[in-house]
Image (cartoon, rainbow over all chains, first blue to last red; front, side, top):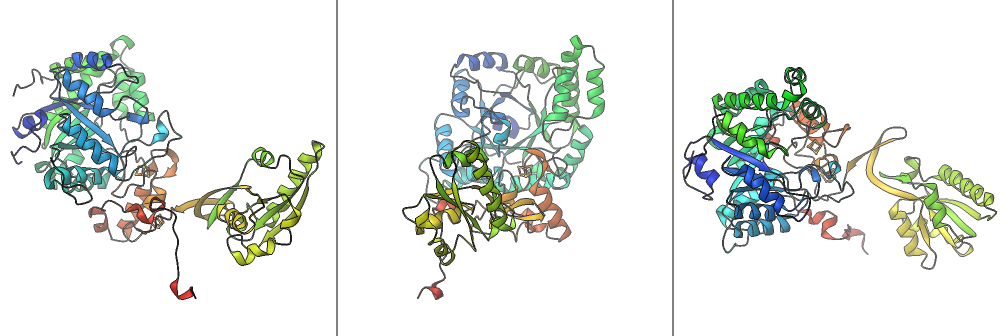
Amino acid sequence: MSEELKSGSRLEKILRSGKFAVTGECGPPRGADPEVIHKKCSLLKDKADAFNITDNQTSVVRMSSISSAVIMMQQGLEPVMQMVCRDRNRIAIQSDILGGAALGIKNMLCLSGDHQKFGDHPQAKNVFDLDSIQLINTVKTMRDDGKFLSGEDIKGAPKLFIGAAENPFADPFEIRAPRLGKKVAAGVDFIQTQCIFNLSKFELWMKQVVDMGLHEKVFILGGVTPFKSFGMARYMANNVPGMDVPDELLQRMKNTPKEKQAEEGITIAVETIKKLQEIKGIAGVHIMAIEWEEKVGELADKAGLLPRPVL
Amino acid sequence: MVIGERKPFDEIMKMLEGLQKISVMGCGGCVTVCLTGGQDEVRVLSSQIRMARDKEGNPIEIIEKTLERQCDPEYVELAAPVAPDVEAVLSMACGVGVQFMAERYKDLPIYPALNTTFVGGSKKEGYYVERCQTCGACKLYYTGGICPIARCSKSLLNGPCGGSTNGKCEIDPEVDCAWQLILDRLKSLNQMDRYSEIMPINDWRTNRDGGPRKMIREDFQR
Ligand code: SF4
Ligand code: SF4
């Protein structure tokens, strides 16, 4: 893959240097108190190379992704600003991209966004002026061509490392690799996948990705989520659209005594990371420890991913 | 056709508060076909209203009438004999009909008895589904004849989101994922190449976003 830096972000440098990257996640608070982010940051610092800041995830109102990202940078961590297409039209999107870049944000993740039905404001009007693939292309056009969607010149193009998500477990399966191909054609630099529990299906997808040569054009980070408990595993299996949790994993969690379930969840995640490291085309992992930030360090450590390389 | 659904009875009664003489006006177009605003429904709603008012000891006089179409001035004109005799018209047409009536009868309040819900068709009797959002730039050539704007919950133009599961949409296991349908059909039509092309960012000016729309056949404007 090219070694020319597009954004100069830490995440980009790690990936382009061929090192196995680790990203984490940090959900902004449901309030205006920056302390919550400070606290999460102190748990996450040095445990990964960069951290996604979610954008009103599951359509529940939270502190904005841009401002949370800035607070994170003040704590010395590198954010990946998530942006969904649900809440902004192309005018707001381009404006926020400029603002984010001006504030020093260097990584951005382009998402369609969960439907507002899932959140706390199901009455809201949604936007979806663009879809995630068009959003990727928008950032790329702004960065590489220095142009707005209108075709007009940007004075001071935003230098962002462009990410997107892909869910190999959503349907229809056979277009999931071609869909990644579309994201690559649109200009994506890195991909974080949906949480991987069904490794054999994931491997099948990766094989298609490698056969299409996509792994040479985009950095792919496999998504890993540790189960906190059997209850959480069951919830993810049954209630989260596009999530594939095989029965054997559910059984394994179920058969573990309650007080040991968290530990077992970490063990499963460590095993997953180790297997991912062996899959051709995998450039890193994306650890999504949902409201369980204190475990990211332990998980990364047990998987042999610490200390993170110093640049 | 335009699909409409009858408003809740209480809401209708609220609009009629204080009125003694009205006309309940049906429409012989789409809302007759979808069984919500035709002659039969005018009769049923009128007697429901009369009964409710009688029960309150506050009777109301209702002139029942159904026009061929309320979205056409030629037919709207036919309500002229009724108009001077009533305090308001409760229109059972879609929102277009209500407005065409209001434009013609300037001093007469015209109230909607229906919620105009969508542009769709009937799968079978009494079962209606949305199919088009009148975006003004039809994309069905690219999408196997299935509308991504009206039928994908996020109006995505470049394929299914990560929530598509077993052919169903993430918002509801009862709702088909439009992109599953599109891809199935593109495959069976041997048109999968139309999926691999990135569909460019849409120009929404032809949609409602460009302001109220009109369509003029110049050859008819004499
Ligand atoms: S693409 Fe536009 S015009 Fe065509 S069916 Fe869908 S909404 Fe209607
Ligand atoms: S599941 Fe399918 S129909 Fe529903 S939002 Fe996603 S792509 Fe659209």
